[in-house]
Image 1 (tube, rainbow, N blue to C red):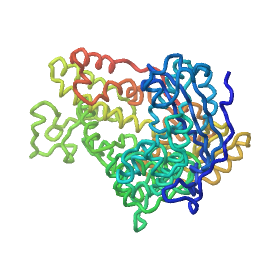
Image 2: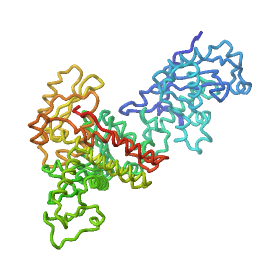
Image 3: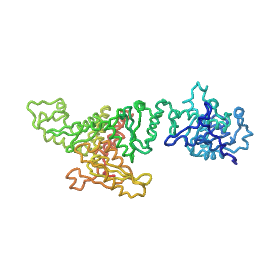
Image 4: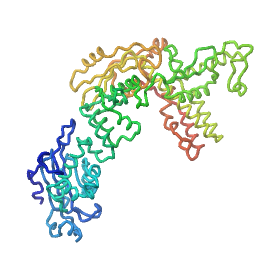
Length: 631
């Protein structure tokens, strides 16, 4: 029933720039790397309908022109029987009468042919919301899946580059006259589509000077981005499309900002579009004069190199990871009456007496408060002798019953018990801290002291996060060498070499290649890492965390693991390896995190605070079972 819907191209072409009169459309000279517009296929479409609503009106005509590189390569045109009468006002406007569409095919036959004609192309229309809205509505009525093509609206493009001084408005007829289109629009689908083709090429010619030179630019071409910033999108020219690290450089070659990307070119281009809304980063982009790429074999390598570059160069526009050595730890001091102290470095000998690192000193202080509440350790900062001085006097905490006052009375045995509870809480047994917090939150909630209950919640969460990080990182930090593999979507393997918790190398084994030869080469060529002399170890905690997340991915396999025992007792008992304590923070944190990570009292305690806190306390009291083992 459908005849002559597809007609061969009439051989029309755009004039060369030296041939075209002033204002005429010209073929763009595009040599952009990636997906240049000159290689893209566009289908410029126009519809005629019985009205303005896609729900209440129907299509009466479809016209479309397929173009690539400035040349017309195909056209599509047909009248459509709308199944309803055409209003007289529409007939006057378009010239399409009821008699003309009486024998035309219905939309159920026309639409599949048009979708096939436009398949894989970028859809272009003047006021695209109207035309695309009718096409999508027709697909819905026919239970056809809308192909979701990339859509370009020439009205939006015209608003960016055509001023009121040039044209009174942005209607198709006005733009066609401005650009000297070879076809004058007349409210017939194919004619208007041909005119839109000329308008499209003229608009793209203008927008090339704003950095709109490839297909990806069209997504944000109509965004209100300053012209100077958009022109800087050429800084992404030639960047690789794989994973890696990018560095924005200032006028003097200094590094302004470091980031990581799965696709370097696409990520860098996004900084020159309206998608970038951060004020500081927009300021950085305006200052940047170049982008230095660091291609990486894998996404994990890129993430690690980003962390190291930020720590090394401390770019002014990076806020996170700039000073990992300043992250605080909570440590039990070495003295007659130990106390908890917030420090920045922990020697290896004190590894079992510290947890961390924490994101800030405030978080470390919250963890100290949780530990003190559970153990009763002293909070004063002076060093105390084992035997109290005769002239010593107790502070107000002793009078309040909050401290056993070892400063004025010999309480060695009792205080030693408290120290042992603290060592257990720092060494992998979080049960006392969780129980103490549970009891405190329950008591405070019954007294309707909800702000204090929220404070106890925050203290417990800070402790659990720091202790869990220590528990999870410790086996990796002690391991001289781990080689792991994770299957790639293409069927190959991504290999990772880790030494003492530090990223030491990576490699990719293609599908069908001998994997073990790649493993041997990776082990031989990887970075040599010395055993760490203190915490956090041979790598920053953030780097070790990235590695752990990679190792914990589904399907990750350990190819080789040289693991050290945490101490001599474990080494002799055969318990050396990669494991987590049954009653540790890592077991409690997942169970509590959803309840404890709420940010406001109302969210934590809910409309019925007593009921909500009771649920929280009950959740905290559940016993953990099972052991978390290696990946």
